[in-house]
Image (cartoon, rainbow, N blue to C red; front, side, top):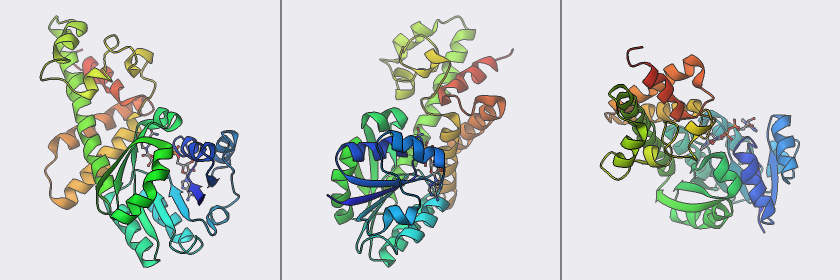
Length: 295
Ligand code: NAD
């Protein structure tokens, strides 16, 4: 049984660390917010008073933080105190440059590293059904995989260092854009006399089909489990979608990739956030888009 430090016990980290604890792993968590630590403790996660306390001689260090800067800070602090040859696993969604830098600083300390961002949200974290997108050398991936299987259902090795983050950003670019396209189509339909159920029935089995339509339809009615049927309570908050699109835009800018729809989608989610929709599910952008058609 490996000793595991889990740093970042927020909405995602707490239930992920709890999955490890429930599986009998020797996990010790830490969060700089006392409230987050207390919430994790209530889920059965032993919590330390400092990150160094959790990570001293740990064989695995998992981070689930908000930004690349936080991840680099925590890795720089904990690389010297973790066990020799420890495995560092970052599950946060962060910028590509920080993800690549994290691998480099781990290598410089003779540690192993993997970027393993997730999709599936809080529900997936609680239900151990997360999807992990991994970027790592083959040996680090092989070492991390059993651990990731304790917290998730689908584990993909997308390539070398940083390419898990790359997969996450590209996937969420598609998600953010298809949701706006779906919202626009339903907004138009409502103006030209087409019932949402009729459009859904056709598009769900035709070339307009997407996950945004069939799993997360932004109009109340057609998909009972979608956030549209619970006043757009998340789900996946607009502010997080906006964060991911901005990370994709930054990656595109640096790589010289052309992503005009990513930029346009980010603008629309930013507008929705400015109108008070930041904490709503991102499919709530439908309300803004449909309402904007000439009223
Ligand atoms: P969160 O804000 O709830 O949790 C992050 C935690 O990190 C906070 O509790 C914060 O106090 C802690 N933290 C920050 N810096 C720290 C430090 N130096 N030391 C110790 N603790 C520190 O965020 P979340 O919703 O759990 O998301 C975590 C990551 O997962 C983000 O990168 C997010 O983009 C990504 N993500 C979130 C979801 C989701 O649905 N919430 C889905 C997929 C991916």
